[in-house]
Amino acid sequence: MTTTQRKIPPMCQHQPPCPTAESADRESARLVAHHPEQGWSLLCNGVLLFEDTGELLPDGQVIAPHRPLRVMTAA
Ligand SMILES: [Zn+2]
Image (cartoon, rainbow, N blue to C red; front, side, top):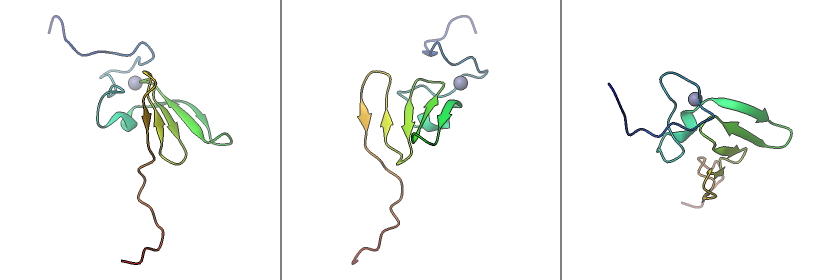
């Protein structure tokens, strides 16, 4: 319990720390800013989460929207 290799984003003050932006469950970090009128939210791990579930990571990486599409498909 002395040192951990876990990277804690400076924005995240939560205990236990939220998932980092590199984590697969990064979306479960807490909202620090929510702007529904502009269609985005900022998570405490630095991830920008867009209304269409697309994401922009702190390192500039763009994650394509991945929400379950409820469109009719000719399956
Ligand atoms: Zn946090």
